[in-house]
Image (cartoon, rainbow, N blue to C red):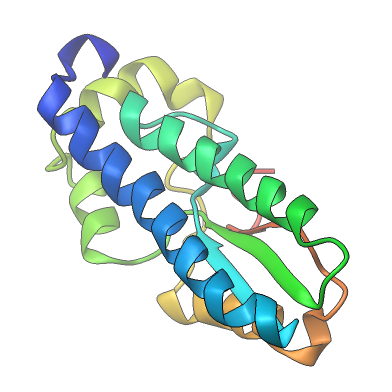
Length: 157
């Protein structure tokens, strides 16, 4: 929660969730722009639009969604696509820890946000997120640019 977030944690999460993708995109464009071809897929979260978890986490995921659209606009006249997958509750170690109340601050934040979301709702498997990335990376997604593809099994409509 915002009132329990210290600067060290905030900067760590910001650097991981937003700084990392920004650096990756910048480096990828050095290869993609001369070829006028490429696909960039960021991984966000349903929390990018439905901020029911921690303040830093949800803020960085929302920023990643905006960064994705910004990059897509920059690349609109190219054959380079930039999109983002927004997973919902996906059976991963982090999700299972959150469900069990073992994530720092997770259970406390849900006291405030729980009635705004259907959590955990119907869960997805990691393979469901991989399939979304495969779609975006393939020719099937060739005209998809700047979109947040939310994969949540309908839990966060």
